[in-house]
Image (cartoon, rainbow, N blue to C red; front, side, top):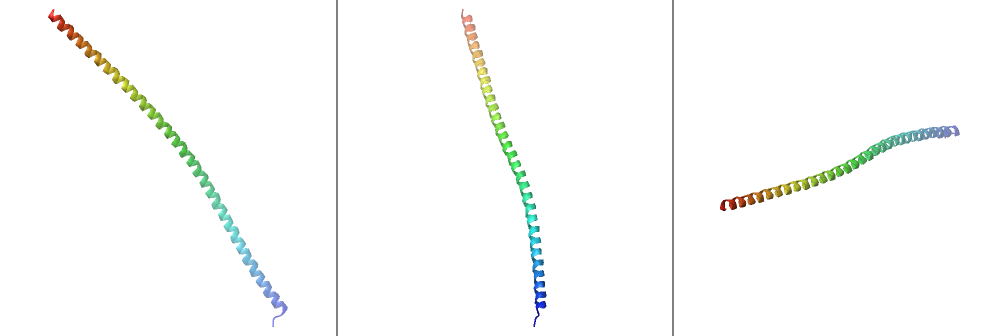
Length: 113
């Protein structure tokens, strides 16, 4: 039969084993928590970097749209200037042709007289 001291020794041994297992679980839990916190900080830093990169991309898109609009305005102005130049050139050619016509009429009228 088991005596009281044997039962107490078995209980103490079981208690020690359970305490050691509990400490091991707590240590593992603390290590996992530390690792999770470290990965969380890393992810937060990466998210901040990504957010700043997204803001830079948005700013560059706005700049690109602005420059595209400026280019469109410049092309419109150049098109307008080209039209004005061609119109003036056409007017000059018409004036030259009218002068030639008038000169030829005067010359032909001069020969008749």
